[in-house]
Length: 266
Image 1 (tube, rainbow, N blue to C red):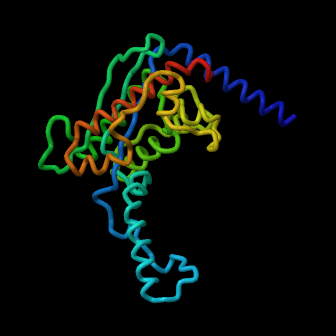
Image 2: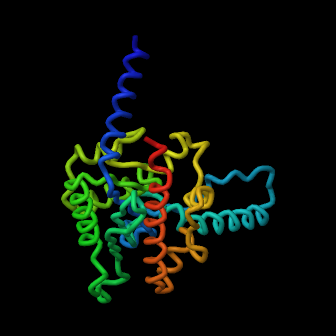
Image 3: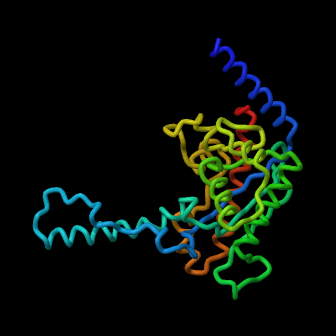
């Protein structure tokens, strides 16, 4: 009896998703680019702990010291990536959102919001972190109010948690709890499709990259001269337009991917 009841729930959810999505011609896809948080308490930054390193059979003090130096260098080289991917240790550098006609395969409108390097460099397209998160939340409220389905690639595991924690950290007025619950609903809700999860059947072993799916389904490729690991060095080098373009291209590619496979996921 429990299995029958559970099946009826899944059937009802599936019917609801199909009905609501079929009514939607417009979707909103978005992407975030993050860097290690620049204004963070020193105690929150990951630090190398030599006492946690397993020395194996090493006994010679000089060899141990040399080995520890190598392990510390390895640790430090991975800190940027670790912090950039941790919702509690990163900050949003760039947001790009696209309102897309999934049936006509066409952009309706798009917006990119970029965080500047220093307050003294603020221009019309560079915002304080608080203002940036506020604008992103305002855009998502509009999407919610217009009942537009959000489409992401790993939004469930990354983009939404990062955005939510940033709002809490900066005390930005949050979107109502019910909406967040719908966007973060495991196994999907018509208001949010996470294509990494959907195409991987919610199984971590089946997940593949956005670039893989784009190539496999014949809709293009990700930006050739850029990947996520290059965002922070590019920011340090002042390559702001390159980062904006990369973020925008990922958001657009996600929208195109949904236009290609969406009807098969319902």
